[in-house]
Amino acid sequence: MISRRSLLAAAGAGAFAQDPPQRPNFVFVLADDMGSADLSCYGCPDIRTPNIDSLAKRGVRFTRAYANAPECSPTRTALMTGRYQQRVGGLECAIGVGNVGRYDEAEWLAAKGQLGLPTTETSIARMLKNAGYDTACIGKWHLGYGAKFSANAHGFDEYFGILGGNADYVTHTEEDGANVLSHNGKAITREGYLTDLIADHAIGWLRKRSAAKPFFLYVPFNAPHTPLQALGDGPVGEKSRWNEGTRETYVKMVEHMDRRIGDLFAQLKSMEQAANTMVVFMSDNGGYNRSRNTPLKAGKSTCWEGGIRVPCLAAWPGKIPEGKTTDQVALTMDISATIIAAAGPKPPKPLDGIDILPQMTGEAKTVKRTLFWSYKRAETRRWAAREGDWKYVIDNGKEALHDLAADEAEQRDLLAGEPVRARRFRDLLAAWKRETAAPRLAGFPPPRRRVSQ
Image (cartoon, rainbow, N blue to C red):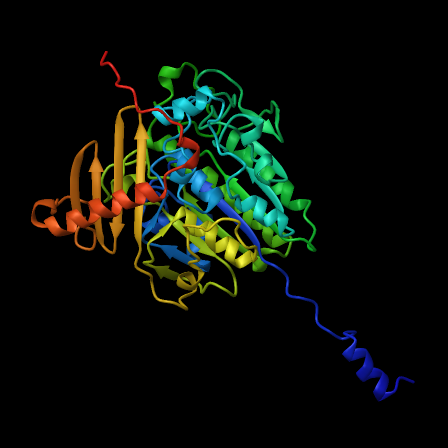
C-alpha cells in the first residue's frame, strides 16, 4: 500500500510532473512571381485557390505585406538571414542563369567565385537546427549554385529542388539547357511536373518526421514563374519562347500549386501536427508576366507597389484568431524574426526583422515602420522608403513621393509640394545605405563606366 508520505515524495521528485509543452513546427510556403491580387481571398476573379485561402479563414490575412525586394534572390536572402539583404552584398537582384552577376558588385563577386549567400551570415535554418529542429528546404533555392552556398551548408538537413531562378517544368533545365535539379548537393534527374516533384518530396519528408522532434519546412515553389507551363504541357523549347504564354495557362499553374498545397496541409493533419504548426504563405516579389497586381502600379523588378507588395497569410491554431485581417506593414524578414522568436533561439547577429506575432494575434496594435528597398541590375538603380503611409521612390534617378493612405496606386506624385518631407526621405535613405553597407564589398573598386553599344 502506498502511503500519503510516499505520494508526496514522488510528486516532489517530479514523478507526476506534466510533460513540457510541445515546441511549435513551422511551414513556410513561398510562391514565385505571384501577383498581389492573384488569390481569391485578395479579390482575384479568375483564379480559385481554396487551400491557400483557407489560411485566411483559419488565421490572418495581411493587407500591407511586402517582399524585401522586387526579385527572387534578394528576398530569399532576407528570409534566410532575417536581415536586410544589402548587408550581405552582391544580392540586390536575382542571380543570373549559370551563376551570373547582373550588376557591378555581383559581377565582381562572381569573378571571385563568391556570388551567393555566404555561410558567415545568419541563417534561420541553422538557428533552428541548432535548437533541435529538423530542417528541410524543398523547392527553388536561388542563393548560389556552388556547394559552399547550398541549402545544406546553411543548416538544412534536407534539400531537393532547383538551384537557380527558373526551370522548364518538364525537363527541369534552365534557359541555357543545364539541368538544375538537385538533391542534397548531387545533380539528379526525375520525371514529372516540377510543382508535383516539389510537393511530393515535401510530403514525403513530413511522413518521416517523429512527433518527438519539431520541424521547420521551407517550401519555395517555382510556380508561377516563367516559363508558363501547365500540368500536361510539353517542354518549352528554345529560349525565345520562355516568356510566352497566356493568362489561362498562368491560372492553371496557380490552381495546381494550390491543390498540391492542399495535399501538404492534409499531410500535416494526418500526422496530427496541424494544431501545433504555424503555416505561412507569401510570394517572393510582385507579379510578372500574366499576373495580376491590380490596383497597384507596375510589377516585378520595380520598387513601385506592384513590384514589392505581396499576398501574405498565416495560420496557427490556438495562437492566431480565425478570420483576422491586419494592416501591419510587414516585410519578408519579419516572418523570419517571428519564427525565430516563437522557436526560441537567440540570433547570433541583430535582426532587422521584428516579431509581428502580437500583431497577427491582435494582442498589440500595428507598429509604424520606416522601411527601405533597393534594386540594381545593369545600369538600373531603384530605391524606395516607406515611413508611415508616405512612400518615397527613386526610379533611375527620377524621384516621386506618394501618400499611400490616399493613393496606393501611386498615381499622384506629391514631391513638388512636400520639400521638407522629401528632404527627410533623402536623408533617411542615405543613412540606411551607410548603415547596411556590406563588409564583403569593402574592396570593391569604383564602378567602371559602361560604353553604350
